[in-house]
Length: 158
Image (cartoon, rainbow, N blue to C red; front, side, top):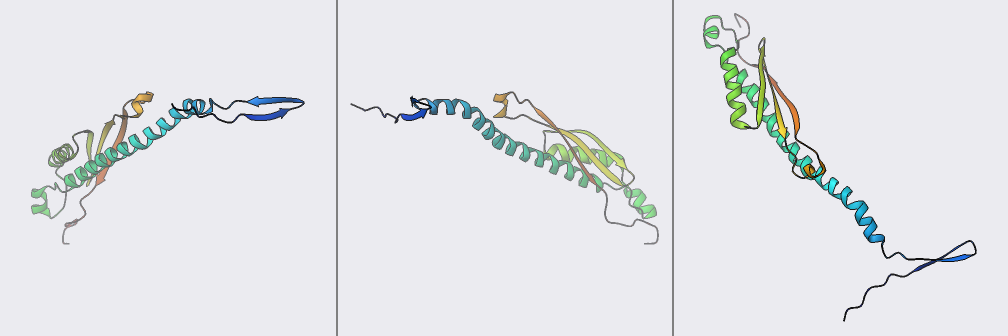
């Protein structure tokens, strides 16, 4: 036969009266109070790490797409004048293809060419798995990458 573990009763004095405090339900109260807090912290750690990894993957895809698009120079202009200038159509398609092949979850919202620089912008929707139990819905992150051609002949006679 098993014996029930009994906690000691705390005796204290309040004025002239002697009071006996029974502490047998304290663990249950602490469990009810602290369990949601601990679950939320575990959710932040778990989902926060997963969200950061997905963000980095999307950022790498956007940066890589900008680098790939910055390499899409206009070969006819380079052959005729020796200037490195981006071919906007080729840069746009190269950026889209590179971004989608490296991170299919990245939704490109725009590829813009400003002078000789390429900027790739997109959004990434992240769905938390653990924090969705607490009502945290999908999060949308804005991601961008920027690059320009860093080599070649930039002026005639160089």
